[in-house]
Image (cartoon, rainbow, N blue to C red; front, side, top):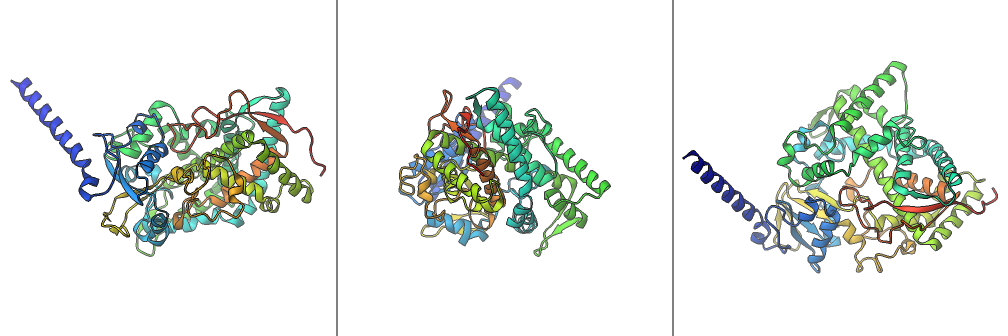
Length: 507
């Protein structure tokens, strides 16, 4: 008898669950909003959930299925979301009507995990106040002050590559692995005041941790996908975006660094010093009355966020850039000629001022960010009810809006021949309404200026000494994308052949 009762309950539960899934998938139909047909449970993101494609590729399919429309709906698993295609509406959401969309995400599991209490996920007036404080260590003035630290990292990178290519002439290198050592050292010394030693030792502690931050192993990738797509499931223990090992490491780094500086009265112009100053205040209070305690956990969360985005996004940009330069020798030659000419005017020294004069290199980096934007989609969460202009759609508080950046940047209507690497398209500047590699509006990437200087400095250091060419393992462009990373990455590495330059300009 109990067996029959159990079977009946199981059937009823299954039927109710299916009914719930069906009702979820009726959200956009009830509102009369165009959308691709969803699957039960998976919505429009089955391949993303099964680690077969990255989210920007899933959004790209939706983008093209909504061809000709300013916006439409889609289902991120069981969550109905809005995809925006119209540039005017994108500008309204990110700039003009920012007050309705000032949060990136505000999911329940983020509130539970103290290691997600950082600037990227903060919302409301707390985000505004914290961003104002953090902007001090990512300003142009601060970047100029710490540029000498970048120069030292560039010199070590040059020596490391030189040793490798002279030991094995014409050696093939994987760009992401090489450049991650550089960005790990830069963010370590500039933001934390810590010599990470990743360039000289690929097995250094920080380099091993950086490889774990965006781990592509199946368990780690699946855990990260779940935290993005199933907020309720993400509340379960062990479903944090970052592994316990990574969180414990930054907990320890925050504690030990602060203790060392307090004991030895060390003062540095960096993120750690800023956070220590805030911690002395005890709490961060906004004009609106919101308050948050500046605890050791919050410090660790901000250090983890700064490190993760700082090393990953810049190394990604540089990797794709050098790959495209290797695939387009004429572009590489033109960039190198400019580098040589500008450096010669500065006595062969790479200075902050010299980088500002390299206009063609600016165009090369901009084209890289167009074709391969590291954060290839933008998202906002509706924080006040919003009437979408020119439509009957009224968004509710909590509704999520996606802008498929990769799709916009590769749309032939917006960028002719979008899959061709053509820096000349930015000869008139970067002011294109669809060019948004750093986002837009008040929540535009805080580290934009610092990151661009870092990217250009590394490119100058390498182009002035080495040549990059296609090799047997090089991928054709555009590069196939890795499905297991939240930040854009090549599916099977970016390999090129590196050789010393045949000649060097006279200083």
